[in-house]
Image 1 (tube, one colour):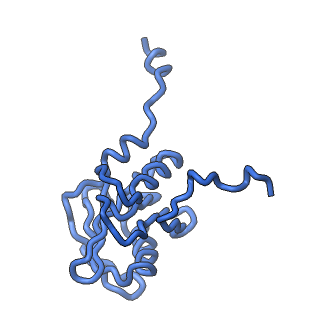
Image 2 (cartoon, one colour):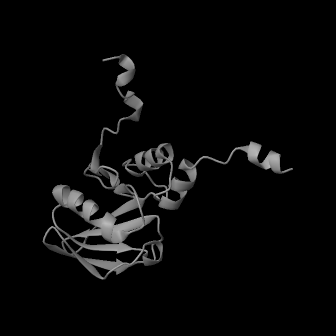
Image 3 (cartoon, rainbow, N blue to C red):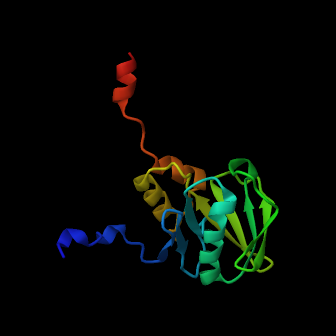
Length: 165
């Protein structure tokens, strides 16, 4: 194995779990520190805006680490065909319309234990998604989800603007 085959230490997230939920479906990173002082507890990168297709894999992965998930709050205007509840792995999960914006999803374990996840838009480039997710799971993160996405998305090249002149 060549040295270049190993990931660079700066790319690793020592306090995070990196879990491929399902090949081609989603990426999930969860903050695993006990402090939970950051604004976000993790990040999710769905491959589409089809909540019926994307949410089951997320809930299955979260349940493995957090226990049963009872509710999910999301911006219904950002998703296609959002039901009020889904049965996932035999467990009833209620879906609530939350005006939190399409950049955050709120997950509830039990009756009142909430986790806020950054939602990386499906059309985000891999590099921008990884950067936003890495920042979201930092225990000391105090940056709002929307700002994380703006910061991680590269600016368009000036060449396109110059060509129009």
